[in-house]
Structure formats: structure tokens, C-alpha cells
Length: 391
Image 1 (cartoon, rainbow, N blue to C red):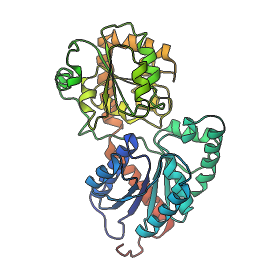
Image 2: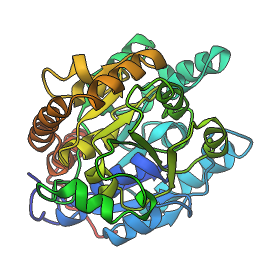
Image 3: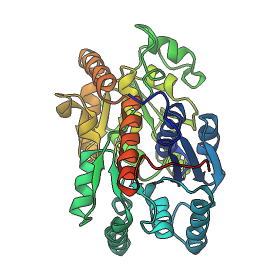
Image 4: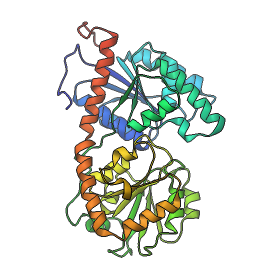
């Protein structure tokens, strides 16, 4: 558990350098800074001004400053590195925590090991690339590791992917966590009440099995694979809802068979998770996706592609029913059909999934482990008993 308070001598200033500012990364950073504020530390979040993160981090009590950075490397990289360096000098952090590949690139080049630095990939950039671009990304990560006091992975499989890419680093693995006070079932009739509160489902029969996919509409999340699979699902009464927005939305709408619904971006996905009979996430790559953990905590079974973090998310015994190879639409269709036609199996999977989420993926445990990592690194870089001045 996180400590309730800290003395001035042990109080840490943590600079979170972040890009992207939406989706799972934003939720992870917001949860971390909220826990750090409660523990008496000083989190600073430097990120682009748009997206969910600035408002969420500020509401959590963090100081937020603008770091204008594009999502991918480009002509502005030099300016982004220089700006990151100025922010480091301005806030004099005890620890820098760089989230995702772009922030990891700019932050480590700006600091080059002068301040204890944690890099958290949130899924490796080279897994999203092909050919020469993937090779360059791997080469950079091998170089950048020398300026990482710790590379923090959210799953053991993510760490193994880094090792396989030739990255020699000091590693920590801390699973993603979720807020179990927010993600929980609403009672025995939760799906019925949740559907009634969702206007998009008006006209859908109450007994129609409902499959939900929550995630940015992008190549990473694999909704195109899901739509191909959906055409072969044998339960003709089932409905599929894609919750999220993103660059692939128009392409996916054109490819969707009749009966597939698009919910758009959603600030609160809990009604969809509680209404669903099954959550499916056919990602091409991940570190450890949050949406399945959130669904599991709500008592909803999940069906995932076998990417980093998926096996570690699932409860023991779920793999034969709930895991398929990435980009295998035929296997995905078969698994969907099997689960949609077996309500008793879904119910049992939902119960055991909920138990696993609540016992393993509590965000307070995650945040506490991250804070202990910071304290370890700071303790290695300076005496913890040194008198500190207010910044």
C-alpha cells in the first residue's frame, strides 16, 4: 500500500514526460499521479495540451505543463528535446518517468542519465513497425537503454520482447492496475440495466448476446480483424459494438457488416463493460491492455489475441477459451461462436475473471510498486538523509 504521507526530506518531485495523451497511457499516468499526490509527493506532468491527460492529471492534483510533442518522430524532434531539457531544469525533478516511445526518445536524449530516469514503453514501438523502420526503432532502444536507470514493463512478456530485440537494460516488471472502486459489477441484473441506459442499443432485443470491443480505432487494436471474423460468427442474433474513435473509423465503417454498431469515443466505458456478455480485443501488439482488466473487474469475460500481457491478464484455465493468435480471423470467429453459444461457460469465465482482476490488478498495488522503484533509484543517486530545499 502507498504511504499516507512523507517527510520533506523524502518528498519526491517526479516529472512525467508523456506522449500520447489519450487511451491507456493517459489513464495509467493519471492513476499514478493521483496516488503520488495522496502520498505527499510532487508529480509534474509534461505533455501536449490536447487529449484526456492534461485535465485528468490536473484534477488528480498534479502540476501540468505543456510539452508540445508530436506522436511520432519528425522534423520537430530537436525542438521537443530542447523543450524537455528546459522543463527538467525548471522543475529539477528527483526522477524522470518517460511514458511511451516518443517521450522515451526525447526525454532520454535531453537528460542522458544526469537524473534518475525510468522509461516505460507501454508496448514497444518496433512491434508497430516493419522492415527498416522496425530495425531503426530497435537500434534506438538498444542505445537509449544506457540512459535508462530502469526500463519498466507492464508485463513479463513485454520484457521478454525487449530482451529478444537485443535491449540490455535494468528491468522492472509491474503489472498495470485498475481502480477497483470504479470497475466492479453493479449487481445480478447489471447487463439489463446497463443496456437500458445506452440509447445506441434501442431496438436491440434484450436477449441478444452483446459483444463489445473497447479501444482506439487503429491498426494496433485490430478491429479490422474482428470485423472479418464477425462475418463468420454463427450466432446471427448477436450484436457487436465498437467503442472508441480514431484514425481507422471511416475505413472500419465501410468494412462493417450489417448490425455492427459504432459508439464513438466514450469518457466512461463502464456502462458498456457491464452491458456486454463478452469483451473482445484482437490487438496486433500491446504491453498489457487496460480494457480487458477493466472488463474482468466488472465480471465480464474477455477474448484476446495472444500479444504481450494477454496471457498474464487471464485467469488460470481461461487460455483455451479466451486466447487466439493475432490476426487469425478464422480462429477468432470460432472462439466467438463457442463463447456466444455457451452462456454457462461465459458466466463461469466472468466469475473467475472478476476474482483474478480484484486479486492481482489493483491500481493501489501498482502505484505503490512504482513509488518504491523511484525511491530505490533516488537512494542510489544521492543520500536519502540529505537536507532538501523547497523547489
